[in-house]
Image (cartoon, rainbow, N blue to C red):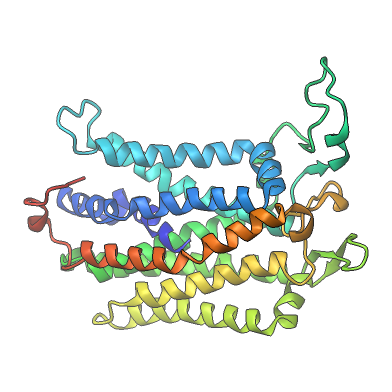
Length: 366
């Protein structure tokens, strides 16, 4: 979610920039980071498949219209950066910038709406007993374990306003983080000044939609799991109780929210403060991590079924085999090294602030 600042910046290509020089700067500053978001999203999908195969098959196989739209948005991004400044570009730069805008606008919103279903539920049924059936030639789907219960295949999530709230939260958060990134990296003072102005425009709706979603979720029913019987039931204030009953998670959540707000407010109040992206970035990581934790820990169904409560997926009934989980555990030990490489590569690409004249002699211009 932190790395979605790339998408947030893309969604402001036509509004934040008022000249070709500024658009050129924005595309190239974001172009040096777009692989981070793309690869981490793919890694999330791979890790989800290895650790929770039933979740992967249920969500990606059932709500495939949502995931296909998200994938399409990110394919557009890859194509846009690859061909934006290539010689003989018959479509023109504006076409590929439009592709970047589409990825920035719809990619972030759809991701937020998809994640919101971890709290609001989805329309599916799971029947593990089907795996023991003999395949019927006339019905190749007879052994399907999980099935979606409507023809919208994930798009029905847009009928729940709570999903819209988190979708808009992720969209405006990504735009807010992009403004903080531009303030930190840009040498062009006019662009920095416009970024501070746009920071206010995007931070306000972000806070409004975030508070709306969080308060709504905390005061509504959640999907609780009986630790003895594994029965899934609706429990009032479940997600709020998860924060209270897991104090470390609750405190971390509050710290994350405070850091995000501090990074935004300090950047708005002081024209000399330019490190908001790092403070708000850490806060974003902590806040989103805690939101994920309260959906699965403390006897909670992390991928609930609104159609059949007992089909809801939990860490216990959706996880992979002990062998695979052990392998994933050892793989996760490499995470600090991966983070170290990202920090190293980031610093190597950001030795000095962005200026249009410095890009003329660059070996790789987007």
